[in-house]
Amino acid sequence: MSQNAPDFAALMRKAEHSAVHLEMRDSYGVGDEAEEFAEFKRTGHVDLDPTARWWPEWLGIVRDTVGRGVVMRRARIVSEPVTDYIKWEHAVTPMNIGAGELVRWLPRRKASDIALPGNDLWLIDRRLVMFHWWTGDGDWAGHEFTEEPAVVKMVSDAFETVWERATPHDLYAV
Image (cartoon, rainbow, N blue to C red; front, top):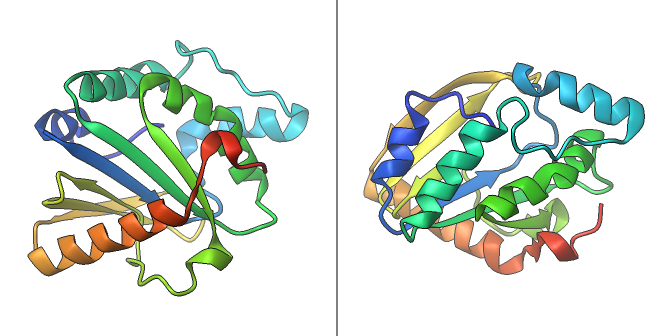
C-alpha cells in the first residue's frame, strides 16, 4: 500500500535484517485507496493488477527489500466480524504476499492481554520505530521516528506476541 512518509523507500533500503509492520485499525480512509475501496464495496471486485495505481511503487519496494534478504512481516489486529475495509484489505493482500511480505491476522479478542503500542508502526531491524498517526476518519496525520531502547523493546515484544498468535493470511477467512 502507499506509504505517506518521507522517502519510505530510503527507509526500507536501510533495513538489513527485518522490517515489520503492525496495523491495528479496522478502517482506514487514505485518499489514494478510496476509488478501489468504493469499487470493492459496490461490486466485491478487487483489481489485482500489479501495475495499477500505487502498487508498482509499493511492490517494487517490497521486492527490492526482500531481495536483499530482509524479512518483511505485516500483522493486522482486527475486530470480528470484520469491517468492509478489512474485507477489502484481505482481498488485496495476495499482492503483498506475491511481492514477498509475510502477512498474518489476529482477531482483536485474542490480543486483550498484549501490551500494544498506541499507534500503527514499522519496526526496522529491531532498532528504529516509525509510528504512524491517523485522523479519526483514518487518513494520514503524520509520523514519528524513535530509536529509544525501551520503546523499541516494547514494540518488538508486542509485535512478536501478535505474530505468534496470529493466523497466516491463507488460513484466515473474513
